[in-house]
Every structure is written in C-alpha cells, then in structure tokens.
Amino acid sequence: MSSEVIYINEKSDIPLFGVDFIGVIDRGTNIVELKPLTLCNLKCRYCFVSAGDYKTNFIVSSDYLIATLENTIQIKGNYDIEIHIAPYGEILLYSELFILLEKLWEIDGIERISMQSNGLMLNKKTIKKLENANLTQINISLNTLSPSKASYLCACKEYDMDRLLANIDLLLDSNINVLLAPVWFPRENDEDIEEIIKLVVNKRREGYSEKKIQLGIQKYLIYRTGRKLKKIRPKSWDYFYTQLTKLEKKYDIKLKLGPNDFGIHKREKTMPLNLKKNEIVDLKIVSNGRWKHECIGKIDPNIGIKVLLKKPMIYSPELLGKKIKARIIKANFKNNILTAIFPF
Ligand code: SF4
Image (cartoon, rainbow, N blue to C red; front, side, top):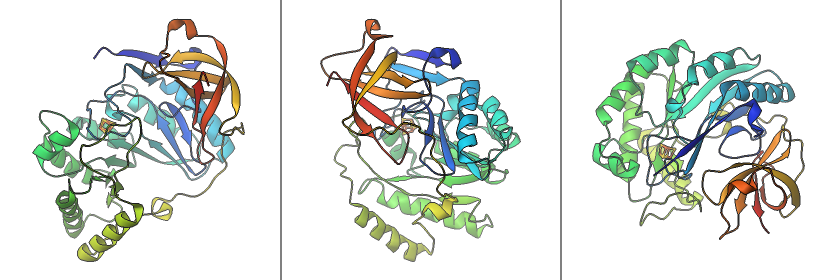
C-alpha cells in the first residue's frame, strides 16, 4: 500500500479541534485526549478505526499540539487535568513523543499523563525513557496470552508474547502504572479474557497494588468504517455487564469500571460553536483525509471538520482551498468531533 504522510504544524492551516483522527479531543471532562499521529505498526483485524491501512497518514507537531492544549486548559481550568494520548495508531511511532511529554509537564494543571499502546514496540530502553519522562500510566491492548491467537487478531506473522509480558513486568517495576485493556470478542477470546484476569489477580497477589496494575475489559463494538472480525457478533451491553458480574464473583476482582474509578469528572467544554446535525455549514477544504473519500475542512481558525465526500466523488487537489457548503452529519455534544458530507 502506498502511503503519503502529512506533517501538520501551525502553518498547515489545519485546526486541531473538530477532527476525530488528529489533534485534541475534548469530551467535556478533566481528561483531554491527544491524537498526535495516525501511523500504526499493526493492522488488527478488529481495529475500529482501520489504522495501518490509510492512504494518507498524519503526524502533528508537538509544538502545535501544546499550543492548542494550552488554550483548552485555560478554558477548562488549570487543575486536576489528565492528558490521555490515544492515537488512531501506535504512539511509540511518534518521534516527538518524549519532547511532547516534557512539554506537557510544563503546562500548569496537568497532573497525570496516560497513553495507549499495543506494547509491541516497548523495550527496556524505551520503558526507562518513559519512566524518566514521568509517564503516569500506559494502557496496553492485550486480548489474549496466546501468541498464535494474538497473531491472528493483530494480523501479524509473529507476535512476541514473551517479550511483551517481560516488558509488562519491567513496567510494573517502574514508576509507570499499567492498565491492561483487552477487547472481549464473544466466543473468540472468552477463555483468554479469563487468563488475563488471572494474570492480574496473580500480579496483585505478588504485591502490585490495584492502581499499579489495572484491568479495563472493553466491549467489542463494530463501526461502519472499522475492520470487523469475521463471524463475531457483538453482544448487548446488558450481556457484557452480566458476564463481567459473573467474572467479578468468580475471581473476586472489580471489572466494571466507571468514571469514578478513573478520576473523571465534568469540566467546561472548549468547543465554541453550537452546531447541530443536518445544519448546513460553510467551510474551506484544507487537506485531503486518510482515504480517498475523505478530506479535512476548516470552519473557523480553530475548528476543523471531517468532510466525507459522497461517492463516487473522490478527493482531488482541485478541492484544496475551495470554499463549500456541507451538511453536518455528526455533531456530538459530548465531544468536539464534527463530521459533514459533501455534496449533500
Ligand atoms: S487496534 Fe490499535 S494496534 Fe491494532 S491496528 Fe488499530 S490502532 Fe493499530
């Protein structure tokens, strides 16, 4: 697959608010999400954002992220803020990661920094660097302890499970907290989920605290634009929570986690525009997107919007800089993510 990479900085004319796959995501709480890149070292069969497969990838300058974030934190209040770095991709591919971590700690009000990773690029040196950079927590997506099943789920030839588990041990002996975040694929990894629970229970028996090693089992969800595991049908939320309750009793461990368990509380939102679904919005096209039917629009100097091009229309450079009208198809009040369609 040929893949172009676009580097976004202050001069790029691409706002870092509003687009789901890059920039700053504000869900109206004290946790602010950062999405610094879209590159991934894997191409998991279940990836809900289809990472590893993009025609165009994006990398955002750490300076630009920091400048945007500073404004966000001004509005939210500079206390008890957690930064959660959760790209549509793998954060350890971000060459500015350590610069970003350093600059984040300089912002008044940031008290925790967590990040998501598939963990496969971890090694002793990187863990030491992450520890020196005062990373608070790493969330590792580990869906099974079986190397062959992990290779299947992640669509990779070899999945070095021993190395990953050894690195998790190194993390546990560092200052960094670990959260294992398996996705539960009904009938695909039922037993594996229990194996992961046992791993956490055993680590806690060895003396690691509940904060040091956490477990956040995630429900398998299917998204229109994501990849799907064949033959696996997601179950209802009721079923998911009933199963978690059974496992909680079986292993005497808390598995149903809510906002309080993660120290999340409501805070001021930064999105200044009050846009609604089906509204027609004026925007300027400022970049192509990840796929040929996608581009990035700009509504005002700070607000971007993902624009889906109605098939059969595909992105072409003539669209760049064009001012168009598009119809909003997603404007969620819970976050600052906007999507529009053009033509409508
Ligand atoms: S699930 Fe995570 S690791 Fe796998 S392809 Fe998607 S972003 Fe990459």
